Amino acid sequence: MVSSLLADALADPTAALNALHSEDLDAFPSVVADHFKAVFGSYDAFTEIPPLEIPERHKDREIVRFRAMVQDTSAAPELYLAHRKGGGWGGWGQADNDATTPINYADLRECIVFWAVSVPGESAWCSAAINNPNAYKNEKIHNPPHPHKFPIPDAAHIGVQIKVYNKYRDTDAFKSTELHTFVGILTSEPLHADLEIDTPKLVPTLHVLFSQKLPTTIIPRVYPNISHSHDTRDELIAWIADTALAGDRDAAEWVLLCTISRVQSRTPPILPLTLTLSRFLSPKDTTTSPTPALVHVLGQVFALLTTLPLSLKALNDTSFLPESKNEDLHSGWLQLPKGTVCLITESGVTEGKVTERGITNLGAVQETLTTQTLEYVFPFSRFAFDTDLAFVVLAEGSKSAFFQTDVIYPLQATVANFDFYATSDKIELPSGEKLEAFRSLVGSAKVGNMTVDEETAKFIQEDFVKERQAATPSTEAPTSGELIQRMMIARLLALSMQETSITVTVWEAAKALEARRKARVG
Image (cartoon, rainbow, N blue to C red; front, side, top):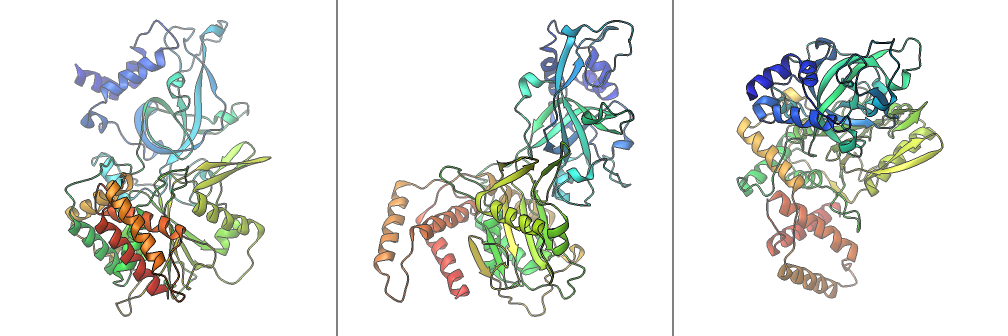
């Protein structure tokens, strides 16, 4: 019976939809969602749904699944006839061509309309792991209808108008930068905002049957993952160091800790630890802005990774903040899903003038680094929304020329003539099994929670007091701010070790790591 329902839904989702029954117009969208969720409830059934990769390649009204980031929710709800005049259910893109019969206004209902884009910064390995391995690949270029709604300028992506009919259950379910998989019927329709134009352009439109909210790791992870030993962590640090950081193990460890960091609390603020990796060599040819090997390496283990390559052109000619123009929300570099790792490179900034827009963009990055909030700019107002991004800044000097971060760590190469800008095909990858272990390790660390037992808390407090008492005029006593940061480091160390609590051993390791950093900084 289930296999028959599955085959029917895949072959003709419209007929499967119209075959459903409900005595209540308002309840019907929930009936639809529950039915299709049940039909595609198993993993095997769900992967039978074709992923949306090239909208033009799909048949009209084909059922597809679209893994996406919600980009713009500012559109007003749209009215539709929940019961068509000719008989049958309305909505989900089914037009009513009977213009002779007056509309029964009691049959009008609202659907939610918003814009969603393919997930910015989603790693190729993550896409391959989730999509059906037998699904078709992107073999031709898709020209998205509204490219300004994607955070990364000129990047290939898909943009889709989303219509959700189950509004009574999902009214507050979709917020900007959230990740969802939308399963629905694909059509081409005018953009909601252009309905009053005589000849509006058609855009891909997905009429949602049901949706699933995605975790920040995209692939669900559990913490702790007891299958990971400390050896896995050590091997990951060694691989990052040897392939991207000229053998500097401590630098690789700091990169690992800061990239698994996330918002723990808003009140009081316990925000991600931000890192500047200083003394990072610039490329010999700055005109081509090559990608650091570190990007390729981290892209192999993190599901979400973006690069913000600073240059005068990027600062002065692009927007880092989302901005509403003519009631259309244009995206910006920083409109990214929570859980994203963002690497900022400064090597592309050459001599020249930074315009007012460039200064605004630099301020936006610093504000996001410091507060983990992102402003959305509207014609007469600005609103700040919470975000959760892990930042690593690559700077050639002793510190960043533009930003203040929690930690500055000077890179110290142990390999001569190291290529910090090796292309992805030059990166030596570990085995597939080892890579999967690395991905699982960082993914679980990103969702883990940490406790401190009473005995360890007492030890840390006494240790801090002793350190202050032992301070001399030539050595500064640690401050309360340093204690808080040291606690953050200890927490991240414990997460990377898959520990369930901060132990005395972890605390001592955090102190030693911080001491080596201070000695390196001088």
